[in-house]
Amino acid sequence: MARQTTRPQRDWALYDWANSAFATTVMAGFFPLFFKQYWADGLSVTDSTFWLGAGNSAASLLVLLAAPLLGALADARGTHRRQLALFAASGILATAAFFFISRSQWEAAIALYAIAVIGFSSANVFYDALLPEVAGRDERHRVSAFGQALGYLGGGLLFLVNVVMTLKPGWFGLADAGVAVRVSFLSVAVWWAVFSIPLLRSGPRKTDAGPARAVGTGSGVPFGRRLREALRDLRCTLGEIRAHRNLWLFLIGYWFYIDGVATIIRMAVDYGMAIGLPANSLITALLLVQFIGFPATIAFGRLGTRIGPRRALMIALWVYLLATIAASVMSTALEFYLLAGVLGLVQGGVQALSRSLFSQLIPEHRSGQYFGFLNMIGKAAAVLGPVLVGTVAALTDSPRLGILSVIVLFAVGMAFLVRVDDGHVAPAAART
Image (cartoon, rainbow, N blue to C red; front, side, top):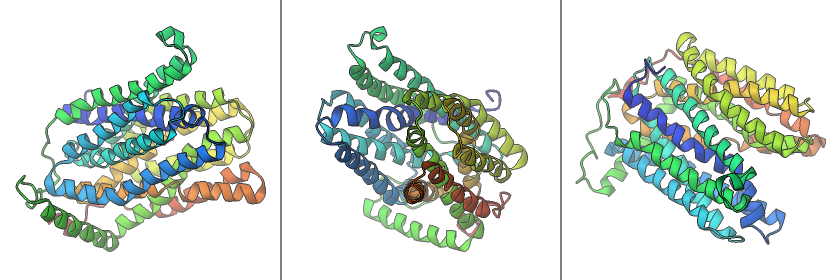
């Protein structure tokens, strides 16, 4: 991998290493726990759950609505790195500020969390849009997988350090686990900032992306004109998606199967607790996914290059579907570990190959707005899945049947994905 990967590609992939620390330590790991036990001290359990959900929903809704427009503005101005830096900085500063929030200051905690999530998610729009710049069409599956794999490794390493820090605060000269968690948030901000520098310092590289837009690239162009151009481009993009079968087939399939993936990720811990598994087993399983995901994602990138991204994605989604069926009948921590390991083999592959396959189906000189739409769909995902799981579980009084219902999302997504032509080029009309 190192011999094949160029310096711009390594710089690009390193940002995944940088920002995945936020996804693991903050979003998946410590924030929900620390919010309930420390910052929301004094609130009832139901109130703390409500405000945590409201913060998540508000941040996701803002990103969902703004992502396509942000991408279009960045395309028109040629400022993907500048916009990435702006939103990443807002996420980094908000994450660092967690360190200074005292017990019971839940309002400040949830507001900063919403800002951090917006910064993290919006920066990813511009990060993904840079893939066509750093990698040619025949390199993207490998490079996208390399970035995703580094994200698993980097996020997993820092999360492991943070977990040890909270279990053994004395080893690090810290007073107690509460201080250790606050220091962990600070460590995420430093990690994210330091490892973002190579990408932000590297300059653009010419590829086969086609000509850049002439309008809006100069600094003297009024913002109002840029905004009008961006809105016009968004309307054009929507028309292109409707007109080109391959694009909308992929996007509909992606909506369903990524909803299934996101639902499994978000509901796995809750499901494990519902069937009586101990909390330390769930944390161990999360770490297992991270470290298995590193080599497995690289392998899936190579597989996508060898047999095509659609076929490789179908293999990964079949694994997800079968693992979901197995999860509905498991009962021990060992079985949970085994399933976590299986999902670790394919989770990064689904995410990386979806990104690289999409980059081949779109006009590359407008990658920002197209990836804005993909990000919008990603944020809208995990809406249907949790509702489906909760409704089925409530109606049947069985969390096992609830988790089993997720196979519907994988089946529908695969039914659309199998009809996508992964040898298809970007729409010709959009290239002009």
